[in-house]
Structure formats: structure tokens, C-alpha cells
Length: 311
Image (tube, rainbow, N blue to C red; front, side, top):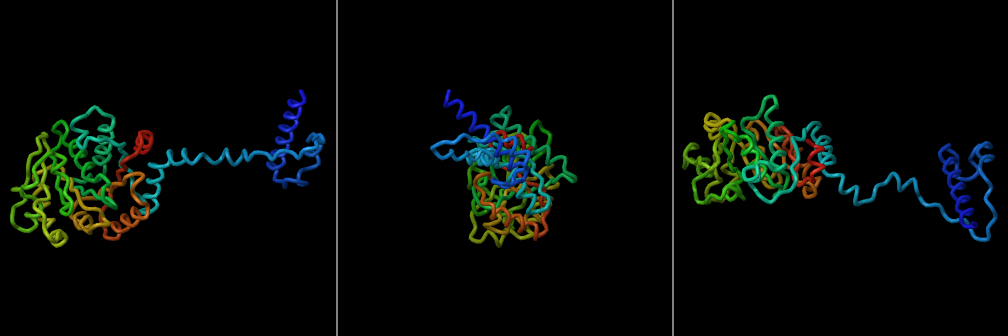
């Protein structure tokens, strides 16, 4: 019984201390006379009183693991909004291994995430018929996002869609669709060695065609000029309902800004947990300074709850 009595007394002393702190008084000597009167006097003991646990601090500060787990989508979206005043999040996508998930597994919930992004882009006023996609740094999944969005736009024959791989430094679109990389492409169009309509190739998916990057060139930046890009896009705009363009990361080249000027808008891809925050801020600032229309961002590598919360 003695231990129980001591425990009850200790708990009562702790409650009294909390009431004193909640009333705004200092830890010792600051409580009102009525509070002091209500506080039971502690029994004398030969051992010093135990130091109270920092309960209040623990209650307001979640464990680091929980904080890290809960942060991604909302936090990155808020960073983007602060940097650019208004960059709407078009949606988030959880990780997946199949680069053409929307085609091979249309019933997968991640395919539905891409459809949500498609819908959000479609209801923009005006909705971009020619849309460039880019990121801050390499390996953010721009080509994969582009391919899956294109599949969703072409789904059910709703639109005639073209993907253009304008990442002449590190092309990926052909490999995603399992096509050979030795065909004519954008580099030859920009070098006046082929016409825009001559380099369009089918993908095997109804309503979806591609223009590959084409043969490698020594100076890709010298080919990506506003006039050359505008001429090619004018041809493709008249032949397709939607043109999606893969461009290099902003930190690698200025191509995204050049292409973005000739497109109807730019969609920015951010890989959660991988994209350095400062690089993201600088990239968005850079696009903003060149005057392109930044229609929004897509967050990749989100967990499922983050993706659902951010759409």
C-alpha cells in the first residue's frame, strides 16, 4: 500500500504543477493563494523527488520517424506555392516499376492517379494542347510521367496524342515504348534534314504516336531555338489534339524554357524525397523569370496516403 500511496501523491503533485504552469505563473512561488491552498503538501521523504517527465513536449512533438513519414506531398506542394505564389498540384503518383503502367495495368490505382492528373490538366482554362514537361534535376521521372499521361489522354480514342522527346542529351522515350533508337527524330527536324511529319512514328497504342530525339548531336543547345521549335510544333499542333514534350532538367540546360515559350504551358515534375529543395526553388524561379506559363506540378514517389491527400 505504501507504494500506491506514494504514487498517488506523486501524481497529484504533478497535476498541481501543471495547473500552476497553465495559469501563467512560474514554477515556484508564482501560483495564486487559492491554487496553493488546493495543492496537497508533499510528505517528507529521505530521497529527493523524482524529476517529472517532459510530457507536454512529447505530446506536441511527434517522433522523427512519423514526421518524416507524414511530410512529403503537402510540404513540397507548400514549398512550390511559396516560391511561385501559385503552382497548383495537378496530382501525385506513388512508386511503380512498370514504365507503361497506364497501358499494361489500366485498373491499377496508380493508373487512376494519372487519369486524375489528365483530368486536372483538361479542365484548365485554357487547357494546354502543347505541354512541355521538365524537372529541376535528372532522374525525376519526366519521361515516364509523360508516357503515362499520354496513354491516359489517348485512352478510348478520346484524343490523338503525340509525344516528342526533346531531351536530346539523354533521350528515354524510345526505350519506354521498346522502339529502336536509330530512327529519324527531332534532332534532324531541327537541323532541317527532315520534315516534322516524316519523323512521327506509331507506338502500337491506338491514338498515340512519338517523335524520338533522333541521332545524337554535338551541340543540342544550338539546335533548340525558338524559331526551329515553333515551326515543328506548328505542324504537329495541326495534326494532333495533344502534344506532350519531354525536355531536359532546368539545371542541365535552358531547353525547357525555350520549348516552354513555344508550348501552351509547362508541367513541373518533383520526385518526393529526392529533389533537393533549393534546386526545385531555383528551377521554378528560373522558369518564372523567362515568362513561361507554369501550369502546375506533379509529385512522384509519394506514398499512397500522400497521393490521395494531394489530388
